[in-house]
Length: 164
Image (cartoon, rainbow, N blue to C red; front, side, top):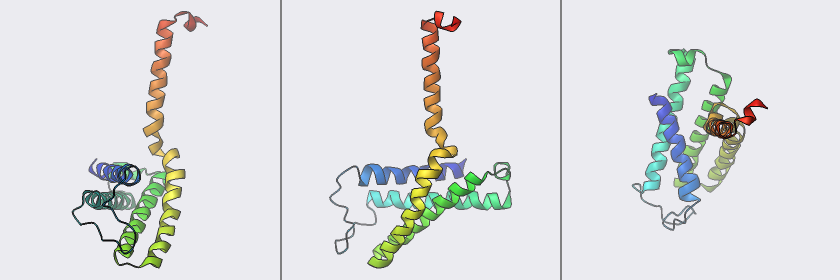
């Protein structure tokens, strides 16, 4: 369960950072353009990013090694979509790490090239893998439960509808 926790919290941290904190709020102290002063190492958003990177890399590496060795019961019957998600998530994280270092080294052209590669990995993962693989239950299951409860409530309030 710890591996799943690491992957999930790392993934959720990246989502929180990218969608809510960086894109959703105006954060004047964060400067991403070249030539602007770097924000400090202990900045909360930077710390969340480092945690997310560690958590995702640890979790995906452990899960991939477990599937290769088939060491535990959950890894013995691994589906190809499990592999695809882990590999795409790890590749997205690795390219993100490379972007971070090339940006810190002030190498603009390698940063842009790696960013394009990063998008070529991340977009298929987010558009093709996440909505249609095992993670789909995050959205589909709660909606299905809700609709079943609505139907049950309707049938309780309208007993004549059962006979039809």
